[in-house]
Length: 112
Length: 113
Image (cartoon, one colour):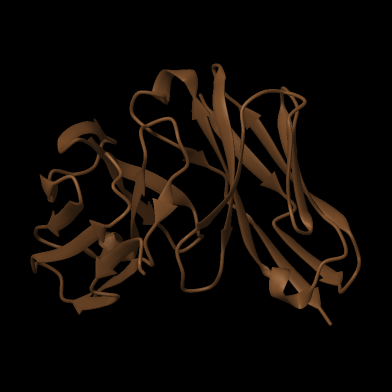
């Protein structure tokens, strides 16, 4: 059983396009996150949601808009894609903000 | 500024050759320190959480320890399947209500048979 799942696994698109990444967790967790991992493998938090409410926006460009339709889902929509957006995006969830986080398999986004 | 530095960046070991990975941190009050393992093309996999200096956690060939300035991940008699990138992350007290983790750049471990 997949705990945290993301779709798609790979996303190749051109500059200026709009794309979405979906995330679902079946762990019953209250808190969900989006992270960006750059080419040097450095992992940085982008957004944090607790009970569908946004609690972190780490100075991410407003071209990135997360949406949480319910506690089990957190989607990421990206407008006007730029070359610098190319990275691996990870969704994660945790049973509260002070506990360990469980990561999805990642979505590799390539902007050409 | 809160910061996490891992060393070495890369480590090559022979099977059975024990060693340690270091995670040094500077935070305004440590709420918790987390170790993760990441295999190529996959998401980070949770290993341990440490909350206070002197605490130790073990799992199979891995043992994590914590002091007030750093954490070590000791690998005893490693096997090729232990090859992965090991990530360290800290949660400052000020971030405990948001879940924010600050990650180090990772140590890539290769264990040769």
